[in-house]
Image 1 (cartoon, rainbow over the protein chains, first blue to last red):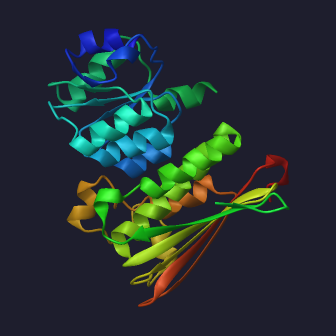
Image 2 (image 1 turned 135 degrees about the vertical axis):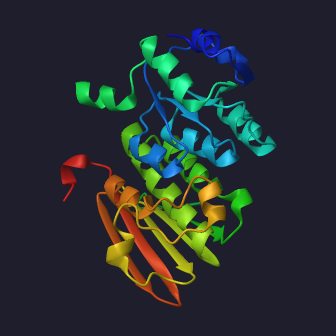
Length: 120
Length: 150
């Protein structure tokens, strides 16, 4: 599924990375704890989080996330947008809460990062 | 950055304690260096995670610290040394979920008691020593040829 389709499903707003919306997303993970994200993150992961400060962007860069979705209408701070733009990480923001955003993506066939590991 | 005749790269980075605005910048730089050298992406990723957690620990708990990156043809070595409160009980600190973090740290998405275990998980060799009231030293090693592991 492309980021553009995910944007539609979550009725999300694109904060940055408009040019990368046609990239494929194969799996996702969600957490507000960056150490958890560092523990389970895999390259190419779509990261859903409610933590919108720039540390979430740093973390996404370190684990090589495909994109970040902020839930519950959260928006990144200026430094977050700056890092995301430099590193080419798309950021989307949805008004949906975490539970519903994850549920929608899962029901549309995006598996969790842990399922990806089980398949290996 | 220094590159000697033995093909050793050595670079040191200052980490300022409690300066959350720059937190993560050292490990981002370290990751860029490892990528530029052309190190295996899987190793770069593990090294970057370990460096990031170690940097965050210095930022969150210490007054100041230093990350020294040494790359030889065989391994990546991060020495992370700080001046700070040190760790009273290392065994406890190594347990997942154990944390002495403040609310400010938790607001940054850290302080869940995962840092040191995450570092250990991503390193091939990990050593920690600490003197309460003085500081903590971590030695994190990743082997470039994974056959040499252990």
